[in-house]
Image (cartoon, helix red, strand yellow):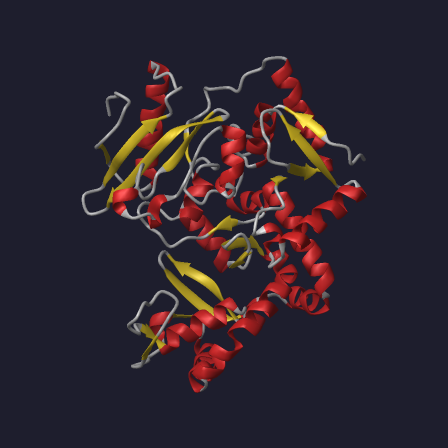
Length: 407
């Protein structure tokens, strides 16, 4: 083990990162199942936006040939994964449940007053779940409207829906099933295995926090302590630096010196040997196999969690513009980066016309340096057709593109 700085070319580093993200060529033998992939990635981010299929399914579809969204829904119903806050709201392997104990306790303290204000409504929701669960939100009747998470000035949220959200965030209840867009809730303590509950109760805060930081480091692989989400805990900048410096001193984390990159990154020391194989490939001028399928990455893909890292390693500026005012958008509300080999070569902004079964490509634009070869045009066409099929569309319509191709 060494805690000295490791010098590396950013081409080798991004290939290593893509490999860890299961994006440097698809895992073909055997074809990975969704549970294997969630464990490999540590977690997959959830998002309700449905311009096309939802983020969690797009993440898995980009990595697993023939992936079906029902597969992830089945894992949730079978109790092999759970939903909670990691990088944000995420799907997480169920065996990691105990290490999120401090997160649940922190949120419980935060929402205690709001739950108390709801009073008997909360008690009624819990009793109904105990007697009838699992239940969707629509199963709870409430005439009164209150300010919910997404309301502005006018109260629009049912009292029972707010109670469900607060209980969900605090970990008292959890999502145990999804029927596509509809979530079903149940009491956490009776839906998590006895062994896991025992481990959770025995888990002390120091151990849980350390395990959660290690999980974060494995998920990111190439990390920067300036990330406000570092360790998926509420850490100050000084605490984040201290956690990294402590691991550098112990030899478990190594500082990186990346050619052409000013920002200081780190990685797990145990990954250096694997990184070394990519360093050697670059020295031998080995190129990535561009026969691999071209891939569209959703805005909240694990690879894209750090926009600074994408800029530094891939020379690619990316911003999710869904919350950007329409007139200020440059690429579109759901523009998806296009990955080919070890480069991000452009963006594709899709929308599904579900009524007519059409994938509408509002924009398909490549970076200025990309050579628009016939081979690339074929890859783009194949990728668009595959993306359309995954999104249950029978046709593709391109509205604006700087690439000429026949569909």
